[in-house]
Image (cartoon, rainbow, N blue to C red; front, side, top):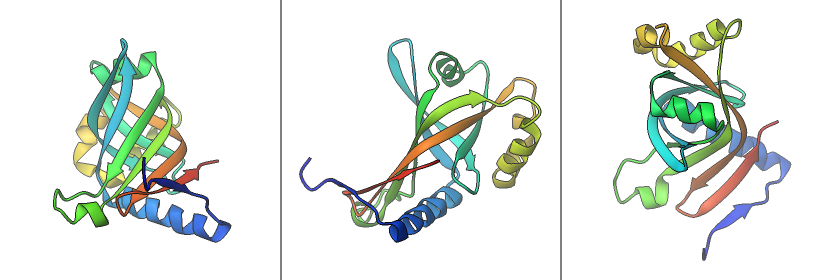
Amino acid sequence: MTGLYISVLKMDNISELKQSITQLVSRQKLAVLSSFGKGQPYASLVAFAATEDLKYILFATTRSTRKYTNLSLESNVALLIDNRTNEETDFSYAAAATALGRAEEIRDPQRESLINIYLAKHPHLREFVTSPSCALVQVTVQKYYLVNRFQNVQELHIQ
């Protein structure tokens, strides 16, 4: 693609990139989850929360959903988190972060502390996330791609 580039970051720019991703992730409540199953990609909206260090993204889903089935078959996922407003200014000012990682259902003993992180952002989903049919899913993020100013792409590896 013409004009598209991935920045090679200096150490001082990494903290700026991490701060930009942290702000985007903390301000947004929904992400688009991309999963894969039965030979087909599948996208769905999920209410999410991230840990402060950006290493993990959490979301909840019932075990009867297509996304849960897909995650059971293939754990590699992408999550898109963006701040678009559907206005022309988005072409200059919108930002989108794509998180790539591996998803797994969280079970005891970690579940309770991670549910607290999730509910701090989504208290209205307490009944849903604590129901027996609901799975709390943790995505272990390997890297983020942040796109802003329409074609500026920066990559952050999570360790």
